[in-house]
Amino acid sequence: MDLSKIPFSRSRRIPPGATIFEISGHIGRTQDGIIPPEIGEQTKIAIEGVFAAAEEGGAKAADIVSTEVFMTDLQRGYETMNAAYAEAFRNRGVTVFPARKVIGVKELPFGANIEIAARAAFRK
View 1 (cartoon, helix red, strand yellow):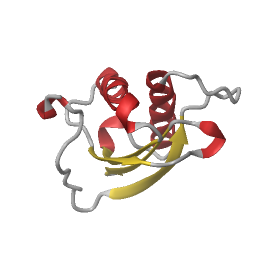
View 2 (spheres, rainbow, N blue to C red):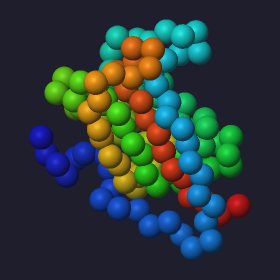
View 3 (cartoon, one colour):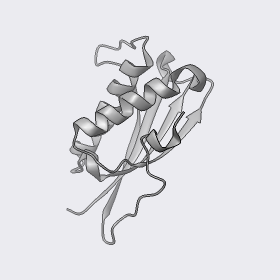
View 4 (cartoon, rainbow, N blue to C red):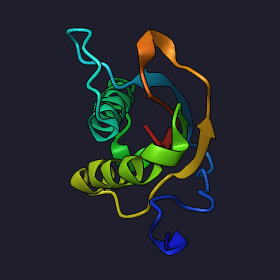
C-alpha cells in the first residue's frame, strides 16, 4: 500500500478565533435502518451523515479538520473505506483531507462495520 495515497493529513491547523464544532459518530445505516453489507457503501452513508451534521452547524466539508473512523474489520475493509472516504471528500471539493485516526473495534451499534466522528473549525 502506497502510504502517500492514503486520504488524510498528518495535521491540520485550527485558525485563531475559529468556532470548533464536534460532530458525533455516524454509522453506515440508511434512514430506513438498513445497513448495507458493503463497507464502501457504509462509508459513504456514514460520511454523508457527518457532512449533513456539519452543515447543520454552519460548517462545510472543507471545514472538517479531523475525523475518527472506527472499523470492525481493518484487514478486509481498510482500502475500500479509504477509496470511499476520499471520493466523498473530493466530491465536495475538498483538496486538503482532515487529520484522521482509524481505530479497530470489536463491534459497533446496530451491527454496523464503520462509524465516523469529526471535528470542524470555521469562522462564522
